[in-house]
Amino acid sequence: MSRRIEVTVPCDWAQALRECLEDKERCNLGDTSEKPNMIVELNGVTKTLFFITLPGPAIGPTLAVLR
Image (cartoon, rainbow, N blue to C red; front, side):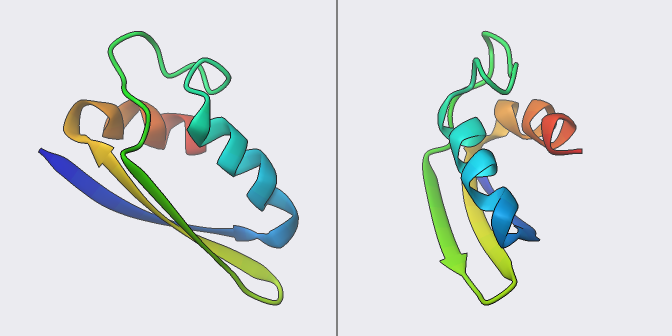
Protein backbone atom coordinates (compact mmCIF):
# COMPACT_ATOMS: atom_id res chain seq x y z
CA MET A 1 0.00 0.00 0.00
CA SER A 2 1.33 3.44 -0.89
CA ARG A 3 1.27 6.53 1.29
CA ARG A 4 1.75 10.21 0.54
CA ILE A 5 3.95 12.49 2.58
CA GLU A 6 4.34 16.23 2.21
CA VAL A 7 7.66 17.97 2.72
CA THR A 8 8.30 21.72 2.66
CA VAL A 9 11.87 22.98 2.23
CA PRO A 10 13.53 26.30 1.38
CA CYS A 11 13.81 26.72 -2.40
CA ASP A 12 17.59 26.34 -2.36
CA TRP A 13 17.23 22.83 -0.84
CA ALA A 14 14.75 21.61 -3.48
CA GLN A 15 17.25 20.30 -6.01
CA ALA A 16 19.20 18.30 -3.42
CA LEU A 17 15.98 16.79 -2.03
CA ARG A 18 14.72 15.89 -5.51
CA GLU A 19 18.02 14.23 -6.42
CA CYS A 20 18.04 12.32 -3.14
CA LEU A 21 14.51 11.03 -3.63
CA GLU A 22 15.19 9.96 -7.20
CA ASP A 23 18.40 8.06 -6.31
CA LYS A 24 17.81 5.77 -3.31
CA GLU A 25 21.51 4.86 -3.11
CA ARG A 26 22.45 8.51 -2.65
CA CYS A 27 20.00 8.74 0.25
CA ASN A 28 21.21 5.47 1.71
CA LEU A 29 17.67 4.03 1.78
CA GLY A 30 18.93 0.46 1.61
CA ASP A 31 18.00 -2.52 -0.56
CA THR A 32 14.49 -3.08 0.81
CA SER A 33 13.25 0.43 0.14
CA GLU A 34 11.86 1.44 -3.18
CA LYS A 35 12.03 4.77 -4.93
CA PRO A 36 8.96 6.99 -4.70
CA ASN A 37 6.16 6.14 -7.12
CA MET A 38 5.46 9.81 -7.73
CA ILE A 39 7.01 13.15 -6.80
CA VAL A 40 5.07 16.38 -7.30
CA GLU A 41 7.01 19.58 -6.75
CA LEU A 42 5.37 22.98 -6.26
CA ASN A 43 7.78 25.91 -6.27
CA GLY A 44 6.93 29.04 -4.32
CA VAL A 45 8.82 32.28 -3.80
CA THR A 46 10.76 31.12 -0.74
CA LYS A 47 9.67 27.49 -0.18
CA THR A 48 9.17 24.36 -2.26
CA LEU A 49 6.47 21.82 -1.40
CA PHE A 50 6.92 18.17 -2.33
CA PHE A 51 4.12 15.59 -2.41
CA ILE A 52 5.82 12.22 -2.37
CA THR A 53 3.98 8.92 -2.89
CA LEU A 54 5.92 6.01 -1.41
CA PRO A 55 5.43 2.27 -1.05
CA GLY A 56 4.62 1.42 2.59
CA PRO A 57 8.01 -0.20 3.43
CA ALA A 58 9.91 2.85 2.13
CA ILE A 59 8.23 5.40 4.43
CA GLY A 60 10.29 4.80 7.57
CA PRO A 61 13.72 4.84 5.89
CA THR A 62 12.79 7.86 3.76
CA LEU A 63 11.58 9.88 6.77
CA ALA A 64 14.76 8.94 8.66
CA VAL A 65 16.89 10.28 5.81
CA LEU A 66 14.85 13.50 5.61
CA ARG A 67 15.33 14.14 9.33
